[in-house]
Image (tube, rainbow, N blue to C red):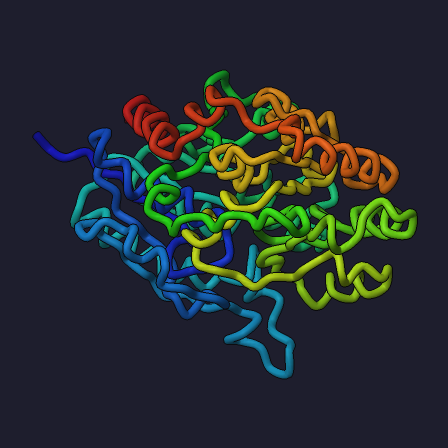
Length: 412
């Protein structure tokens, strides 16, 4: 029998470092063979990545075909005195990847004869590549939206927004299915495109990788004496995860004598915006309470989640239709979670369904101060909420890959 094959188009793939999106494409490529599908990966040349690490390269199965097509980062490779032609950065800074990936993808299609194509956003050029290859090959195409694409007010640049909308509209015309990581994103797209047929928009959530937790280093035991450590692991965006009101709440509690460096340490690991955040911390005088920590290998980051006293989620209301991929790893760690997010958003609803109700609004310093104080009181008493066992069992990457394989079977 002919092997079932799928061409996976993903910018976020090892050796890129610093994005939770890597895990989605990587684990699909790792686990699909268990469910009858052989993956062929079409990704970008590592020169396009601003930051790389070899720590996840060993997780790519040895027999997986990985084609790294020509790609440049316009802002680094085509800029002169910090400026570059706008046309070279539409729909994004990796627009040149299209020129390398389309011919490379056609060669892969001719040689390996895949049964389907899959591409994943939030690098818009990935969907542009998928769209082109679908038109040229006629293969069924699944378009994966880890985040919503052309939104109200995002992207802020009008030319980029129009480019996103064009790709988005063409994608919905040509794809067999479009997958989303949150129910709110599906609801928004159903409103925007009411003519889409039932069943075309499919929920395929993120998850955690059990094997990565098991093979990582043993978590360090927390010292019996010392501050409670509250960890945020991953990028802190100035808008979507703005820590301003969190810092104001910490300053307020410090001034009132409710917390100090002996009781609490907030660790922000691998924010991607350390210089900006350091200025905010200094402005409100909480440098003794907040620690900016550098990026570490993925397995070390998981081990850290298992060793701290609590885990911090930040998600603004302008992302109500999105759920941070890191949340599922937090669930698996089964440590107390404090969420700063809109109670009406998908992140909060997912937390509540998991049994976690320690939620405060990200934009309300007073609400954060009250919730944080209660959270710190509850931890030593064992009352701080953790994700239910049922939630953990349902959230593995292997289980998500099974859902993906079933979807591939449907479209083929």
